Image 1 (tube, rainbow, N blue to C red):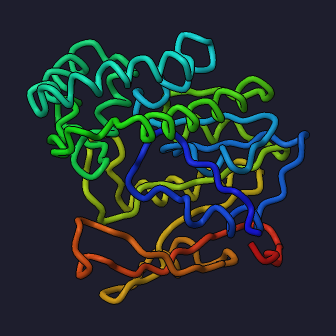
Image 2 (tube, rainbow, N blue to C red; image 1 turned 60 degrees about the vertical axis):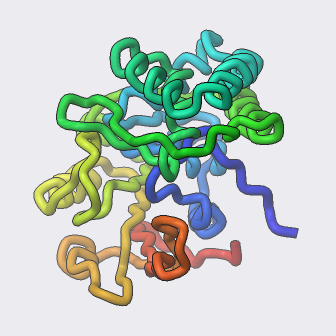
Image 3 (cartoon, one colour; image 1 turned 90 degrees about the vertical axis):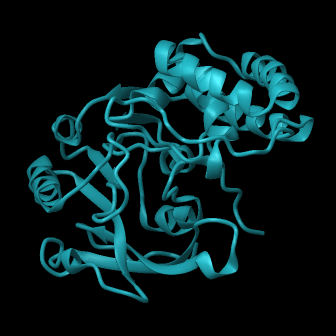
Length: 285
């Protein structure tokens, strides 16, 4: 039987759930190594690698805040259940009126539970912000979104993360990738999942060629083993930076499908690449 893949409570664009088995087969991190993620996103990779010591960082303060409060006990899985049951009932009754009420409240108060609610009831589970850093994803038009089984699913995801925090030394910081990578040394393993060049801009994680070069420089200066997730090619084009910026590193690939919207014609195949600066022959995931 295949090994269970743990899913975090947040949905994010480009989440690496399907690539976790390949990543796990290519990574060897024992308790003496500090796992460092400068682009944490949902933290799905670190959650499944389950290192004893880790530093998770991101420029988006809202996921950082949620996990930080889960770590210090201000948020618990029981509190998440009570919140989602209450707000789900109001969503069922008032529909989009309640969604936009919560969105407006979140943009004023930044309550991490409101952020979870929005992420799970918005259109396509997106995380997107405007130039003023206000959450601006529209309503997903599923008024019965928080049915009992769905709430239990989210609560179980939070509970597993809660359990991992209780037995490991994990830190969550909102800072740049340069500052995060600067914390690494030869006893660190850095996993990087930067935004893909040319993707949409959500005003927390836009990305360009200059930043890609800066990332390479920072990684080379760290003295640590590292793995970088990026795209290799799709049916329309190739990633030119694979051979220019990252050409010296070993490349491991796996095909991945992305779904954008609800129609079959929007199912696009992408060849994903893992670039590593250490010798390995991955075992079968």
